[in-house]
Image (cartoon, rainbow, N blue to C red; front, side, top):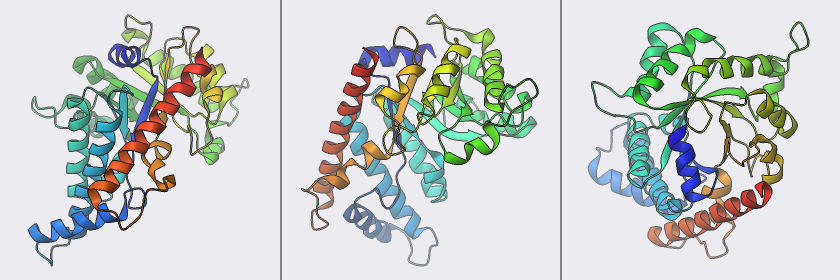
Length: 317
């Protein structure tokens, strides 16, 4: 996690912007403009026509946000599902977004939540190593689901060490139904998520960097502040990725306990609260030109990112 911690310290901002575009989060005129443009290059009977236009709109939307926040935040976290929904054009948009973020000095967390075993897990782990020497995904870290046990984790930990990359493993997620599994009580009174937390701390024990944190991080939701604080004590060498800030109800105060005594140890994600902030701007109208709409997107994303940074600084002071 050394590279991520350095990036956080350089910006004095432990926040990450989730780049999760959907047709509802991208201004209508931007979606429309790139649908028209795609029609000029793609045959009308091509099943990929609509997806190609949407992917182009997503990339321009992402680029506007990255340009607006690159000097404020240390990292971005694109959620691959939003791109996979568009098929091949969406995957191209995902990799282009990751590459563009990297070119602008940002640490990229690929939110891919993979979880499998054997050769399949090894293939998924190519997100971190690339293919045949080429960094085809442009990610600095990925998210992983641990519920197949160490067989599904070891391929990732091995290549993370080899490629100088990081992992974030799901431990205590922010979704309401997570309790159905994660809060189940085991013999001796330990909860499932606590047992997973112990495994994650163990899986990273051999990769602790100069800041005291291993390459193997944990995803811990902002909507569970008391449990998050307890996990911080339980996992002293595990860096946290904290989703659920903003639109899901997490606040700067609720996540403060997930940081260590030095104000390090975690990075907090906001997606809709930043990339969708433009929807509350009275200047926006569907009659605007696409370029003007994207300027409003960028202005609001920057203001929301600055506000989140400032709130976290106050909470951690």
